[in-house]
Length: 518
Image (tube, rainbow, N blue to C red):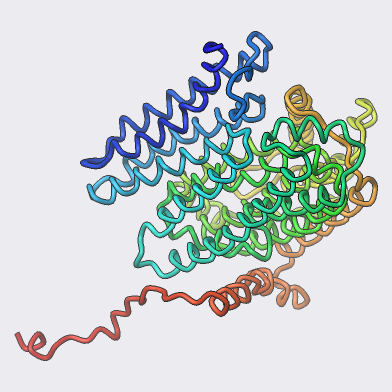
């Protein structure tokens, strides 16, 4: 009997190690300990995941508060890997002030402990406690520089929205317990998987969980804090965008059987996530600051992930989550170098695509996508393939870029390779988590296809016709983010007022007279 508990305790030891290591930095920041914990966590999660997915060892026979599902093990491996990279980068980034180093690594370790605890939790209350713990610990990192007004304002708004998400999650958890008489996620998953419909309470629970995921993923209009937290240390931004903000999508994957039986929850994700996907991607095009562009990109990617969940493409959502986490961790930690690269691209001459280029690229990209769908007999939904066709159209049409130039043949070959690689990855991840058809059907598919086409039109307008009189006002609206954050900020400060730190103004600095005549 004791042996059946070893595997569960092994996974539970990962968050415990992060928590314990937080107290190893009381006298000085011990970076070697923090990196060692991340490496051990990565080894445990990867080895357990390989054995579990391969079916060589059957886990989960002991302590049922801990999950051994392949999705959780993959997430645990991803978080451990990013944790090591983040800690290693932070060692150089935070060097120079012993007190700041200790404070930073302490809260970073606690945050990582709660993130890993959410991933390994099979008990809904344990998951809820860890979810709240992430918000509390992350808040300390977001206000790491308490004198920065924008950072404090962003953390303040994040604090309010996090409490709303936690209330929704708590309500959903309590309803699920009332409906299924169990706190274990695995038992709810098994029961709902066999059901053909949900009760009224089940639909409300699914709606609450979807709402919590939307807020966690910083979807419109509750997005402003994600843009402004770039004032926090760069490693904190990398951790937030590469790991923590993805937990909304992870929550939808965990409760996948519940989501696919609830029309209202699916349409909430399709409407909010779909609009955020398109609008945030277009707003990103108007921004110049690297970190701000990355933040808007994260919002768009999170919206697309929620849309994938609403369409039943949970295998694609998991693949998207993994790829986005790795990319955003690299992008934020490499943002200093990206500034120079961006300046070079802007100063270099570019050849805009001609009308013939657009028609040719559209024909070739659509032909590749349609051929793959027909040959492989791919099932619905088809709106993701519309997005892929748009992406390949841009790839081929814009082959004469600012820094490089390529032929049509080479771009078509590259497009085919990318499309095949994407399909193989999608099929590969489907062995871990399966596609589940949802009830939104053709209507949801057409809605997303319509939004993707609007994105394509908006992209061409903002990139190649921004000086046209009819586009000038549109550009301004996108640059301002439609002023949504301003309205939400005013509402937040009116409902729950707070005092922000005073901004330092050198021109208004008062110097005593005796100091002037020394």
